[in-house]
Length: 383
Ligand code: PEP
Ligand code: MN
Image (cartoon, rainbow, N blue to C red; front, side):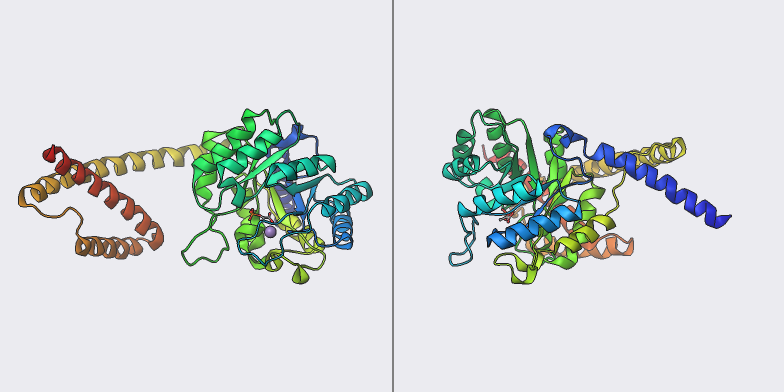
């Protein structure tokens, strides 16, 4: 009986997952590509040879998971001397791969001439790389070249965590009439030690979603992870936060890849990865679950209001300290106090199972605004 219950629960669960699948891809449903779930773009980092492109495309097609094939024809590399791509001839290989497999083709463009080449070769989708999104001149040049062209454009986030540049690039394509427009979250350069090649900063995709709620956001787990071992986990997180699809670098012989070898997977590993993904629904459908969530959210609302009240009290005391510092000509920022406070808050918070990194960030912000408040007090006196 228990076994039956479990099986039934699994079937039910699967039904939910299928439901969720339909919701998940809805933003891309009108784009005219096969409606796989999740929406997947797969293919090698770089186009290296005709054989590599044709074989990878055939195997990806056989796997049945991808809606679009990707390959970089021009590779914007941070350092000269790395493999910089094969150029326009790769687009001919991709046309052939499209004819043989029926898979639509996507590649990166970084200037107006690339756009011309891509359109000449019947490429179906383009993306703007992270090193291009950082520069509004490049982005505008590409946007101008696309005026009046109906092609899907995917805009990767800029290298560094700045939402403004990302949104700005998206706006430039919107302004020239690009209708099928999406963002790709590929992580951000960081100087901090991190298991990832590019720090995910998922908060920025939340902010992007808040700013442009209708915009589909895909995730590129390959460039976030930087290594195969982390791909599954990053792709799952992308699904858990309800992003709209994935771009995953896939190569017939990843270890021999001329760029990004460590993060590419074989077409069969890609199938396994996709099969292991759990696509969840955005909201509960069952009354009891909805009720439970609602109750918990009410409790959290109360706690947050208490937090705000405590912060307000804290800032009143900060003001008092500011006045004393002003009268006694004491500097506002005192490094010794900063270290003491940080160490105390982290040790205290750790006892309550709070993440030390979180505490560090939280109190850095609180302290930053306390200093700002005191600076305002001192400035007011100066004028
Ligand atoms: C790529 O997709 O291969 C690439 C160069 O990506 P990014 O611009 O995200 O570094
Ligand atoms: Mn790459």
